[in-house]
Length: 448
Image (cartoon, rainbow, N blue to C red; front, side, top):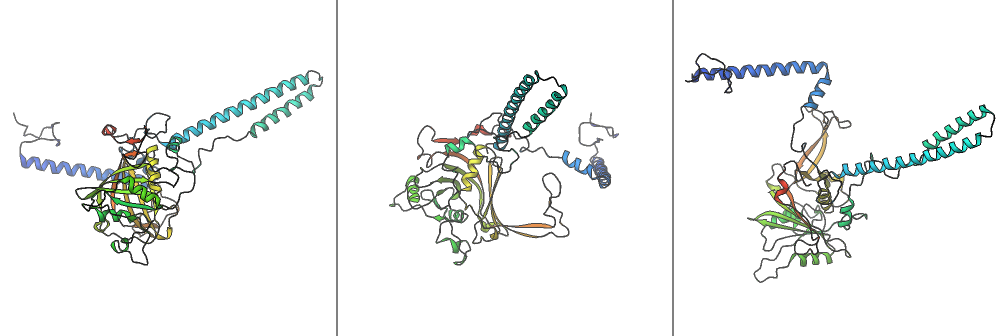
């Protein structure tokens, strides 16, 4: 038997009422859609009137209506370990250790204070045995108790630093010992970078554009190619082509690194290609003269877009850019962030209003370069709202305009080698970390 023609209720479909007549079914669907839309509109209007009277209701509703994204479901390893492969929040682990150290120091200080108080009480009892005046004894007890309270109040501060300090050093001891030249306590030197391609590479324009991001060294072919004049030409990273001649010598990466280190370069970037598009980026740190080179971080490049194809793109200026590093929380993430930080000058020029952003989200590092300008907010624009849903103080009536410069691409870390790449690393710990497919079985577990 077919469906009922009398409009009886049915729980199988999207419509409340089912019918075999196609025209009637369309009418029922339109009617149901209007009814549900009207109900939602009345509910929103009623809620808007109530929230206008009581703003606290809106705040509570926004707090409850938080989307359950994968980032918020992120899981961490329940271990007290800050090695390179551990997936732990370094900031939380550091604060937890400092709180434990403070608690231990406070307990030890309280124990010492109580021992001193007990010794004084025993001495007072011995001295009071020969006294016949009870009033004098009561006065001494009050004085001794006051001295004990004063000693506890004057307790020496804890050896551990405060956990509420914003200048908390997040560098794990394991990373500082493995990469002591990268995590050196000395102030960072001005970087000087050499960029090249793989053997017989053809992505010369893309490699030169990547070299133009790093404002150090000098590239004689950079100004005209990327819109700079001779007067406004910044010092770009040096780009040298790998020989493509059939009789030319094919220099290895180790030979190029030795060449660059002898001439004062601090890092070597190698852009590999696939189907004549950038597919891989290797960052090799050459360190100082008396330090061995390394580590080498290898990334894959996805979705590369040159600056000229970005709609409304701008041109770079002769200023050192600011650097923003977002979302690097684990020991491996801190190593990646420190590696990128050493590729840019330590003192940016704020007057240039140029910023480079490396945003890590779900182990994908999004690279963007912008110019920005502060302007007054238009009458139709609302104030800036923070993550808690409240308006941020100090920025009311101010807006920031952005103009992307390019290039635009996405990086993903694949391996970390001790020395110069895979072939130049020796020893049992030559391979520090390598990405494997089994690491992504859990969608809520991330390495960076």
